[in-house]
Image (tube, rainbow, N blue to C red; front, side, top):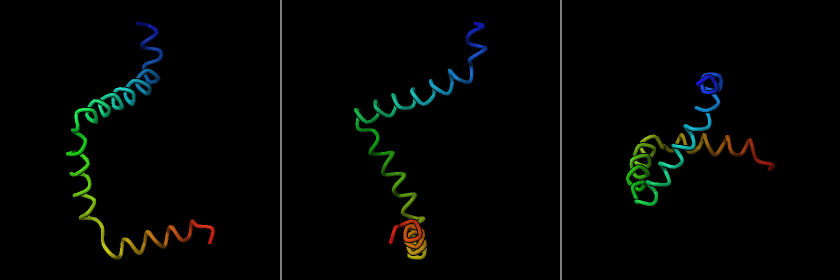
Length: 66
């Protein structure tokens, strides 16, 4: 118990992403991620506009070597 209390943040920092990854793998195996992906895509699609696309292209140009 002393070990857990002393290293609580480290244990959480390792355990939470690991458990999240395991859950995502489980969902992927069961083909449940397609529903999640579709919902995210639909949400993001509403945010996309021609002005936003031009802005992102401009930012990409600034970061390129050309």
